[in-house]
Image (tube, rainbow, N blue to C red; front, side, top):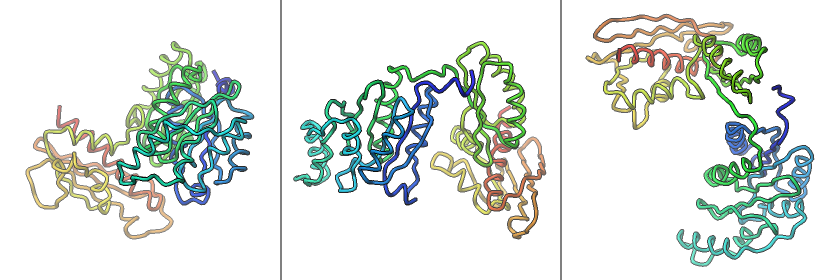
Length: 376
């Protein structure tokens, strides 16, 4: 299995909207849809963004359909004059728009519940769908979606708001694509690593994986690196997973995508004890990252003496003193419980403001280990 052999049943994602093109909002839908498709063993090959004009949306659809087997379109299904996706889809499918009375009644009922006894006439366009398409109901808004086939290709039209779009992906898009045999990667696993460079781990993992029928992948999001493994060969995949997990153990934070701070929040929410944290280093960033309604009673960010297990954090002077031309800075953590006191001094990379983010995750990983030691 190679990257060149996993190109059948390719999927493209098209996000429409001037607000995305102009940078007013982040195109989070495409990212999240792609993540869900890949997680289910499907192959996403291209993302595109189009402004709110019928011609440009239509041209983008035609371009993507030249080399993809499925196209997922998001946005432009509202009641305003710049919501034009349905008109472009009608042209691409070469099918007229028809009025769906059931959809219109659903829109009217929803608007009445929100205090609009007479729905605006502009909302009627939300009940228009290309002929011979299957409507996807929207329980969270007035913009229903739809899907259709054009020859052997599948097209899905979904609303833009994530709370409306993503449930449709889960309830309709994924099942339809699975039934159409788009799911072709049988085995997939990922690990979240910390404290190792992308170049180093890629060199080592690619060499380790070379004898096996598997594909490696990498995603850098500072300060983490996600290492991914895909295969359709059960025996090779199982063998390589064992080798990988042994090799990456010094850097491993979690299977999947849980960061150290999210793991610590989970541990604290489930804990029966509380912690005192004295933070002289992160300027409140650690407290902001860890404090949630579930962890609030377990964390005491105070400098006063208590009988609780205590973590005292100092360092990051290079950051707070705005030093220039430095590549490293120091962090000291003193961890104390009834049994013992342990002091850890570490040197961490200095990357300007990102050093705080790095420190929060390193401290969180250290506290996770500390909590585990206390349990034993």
